Amino acid sequence: MTSDFLTWSTALQARTEIVLEQHLPALASAPQTLHQAMRYAVLEGGKRVRPLLAFAAGEACHADPAQVEIVACAVELIHAYSLVHDDMPCMDDDVLRRGKPTCHVEFGEATALLVGDSLQSLAFELLSSNPLGKTPAQQIAMIKLLAQASGSRGMAGGQAIDLASVGVALTLPELEFMHIHKTGALIRAAVLLGAYCGEPLSEQQHAGLDRYAKCAGLAFQVVDDILDAEAPTATLGKTAGKDAEHNKPTYVSLMGITEAKAFARELHRDALDAVDGFDHGQRLRELADFIVQRSF
Image (cartoon, rainbow, N blue to C red; front, top):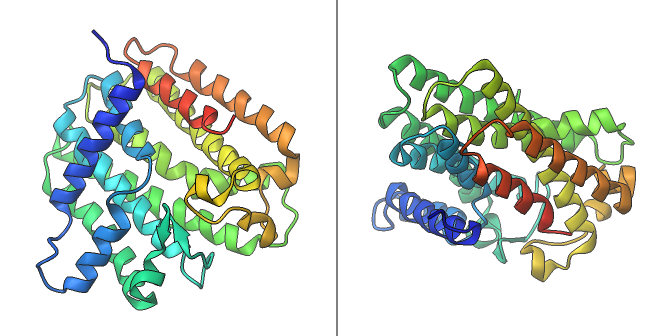
């Protein structure tokens, strides 16, 4: 019998935590402070949405869970590194993340910088040192996918646009372009990497997953913007109201709360439609529900 979403997600969040703990450097190994800070930044925090997306796509494509857990952890390491760097004074200058002091507050800016560098390297070590996909060529393609999603044509590029857009009145297409890169690229990588661990995809299936990932990624960002405007710091686990305080362009500032919520619901419907052809796409649909309904 298929388990309910809460049971499924809780089990895989715990599994992701265990695998991350196993692959992160041990506290006793030198340099101890750096390794302590890496574990501090990664473990015991976050909803693990990207790993859950990888597992859900893997299920839809009949993937080996032992392969999926590797790509899930690699994506989560990239995500954790991005949060460490985003919180630093040269970026968003935040002091709270996942309900605890940010990495640079706890360990200093220099160590936080090295934490991000090290987590990024570890992600690619995982992808290159474990058997993934059906062929070596496919494994190389998976490594390339995560590299592009993380770099100047993906997450880092989106962050650069974000930093350059403070105080700038962006149009809706410009804002979407920024978030397709900053948030969406890594979510797309999580979905596709999970799928690539399974059976070969038809062109229609690949297009459906790609569309799902784009819609889910944008919905995730729209909801984040809504939460930043409406939810208290205690609920968020990070400082609320930072976007408005720093005059950053958001879906809320551009569209207003009501229209932003309507847009999130529209993206939710599009995400569900995109994976309608997958017989085992239940978890992908449930994750789309979770991404949107966590705020309203």
